Length: 334
Image (cartoon, rainbow, N blue to C red; front, side, top):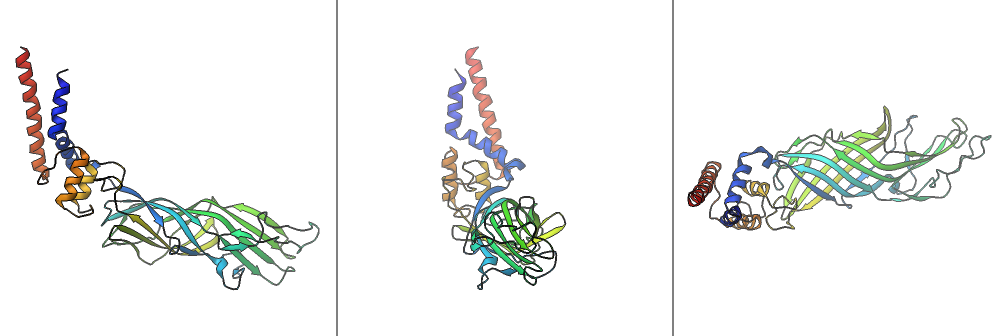
């Protein structure tokens, strides 16, 4: 029974906050990265996909305006950063970058028809259906080869090791690309190679970003913007299939949904103090932001932020006070 009033007084006095803050200041785990979900901006996130194939012939669009070779992407890019407003490191964790349909393209959802198995060169692509990309190749008519192909329901993901960021710029070289979802539809009419109508799963495809253009992380007002130039070939094993090039642009709102939650992880703790200390709160290093954090954390507002050494002395004083209370109660008991 005697311990509960002591705990209550310590909470009210801010002693527990001081202990936690000191532990946070002196422990490396408080400096862990902040994981955030950037929202892809579809109008600015485009990838073109000229097709690569074994015979080396150019892959053409299925429409005069070449719209079948380019589409936009929406969804999220999940990254770890060490500071939301001015990171020195970024790591790509994952993405759900979903390709939009650029139009209705051949072949149909069954890959068309392979035609009569006894006749070569009579495959038909069926009716056009919505697709992310549509490709066409003609090597000399059905007597040689005519191919209609489409890519549908593609979702791309990204991954990387931590990448250094300097003055808001970094290299996206080597960022990994995988395909959690997507299918390739092909219809080949060929007197030389045989007819084929098929649908293939793309989820075993992988790629690595080779774009040399600089990627960037910038903050304007309350919005952080991530821009990642991309150029990669999705391939199965050693066989190249589709080359993509373009840029992903994604944004993240720095406005906290929880007061004092400066790293936007849904809770107010010592990690948010470190964000404030590094100038990452909405009003960098301001007493107002500090007071907001302290109020949400549960302790009283104070006029100055203790340095690590000062915080350690404060902790010693708190521990001493706790021991003194315990000794006093023990003496009263005796």
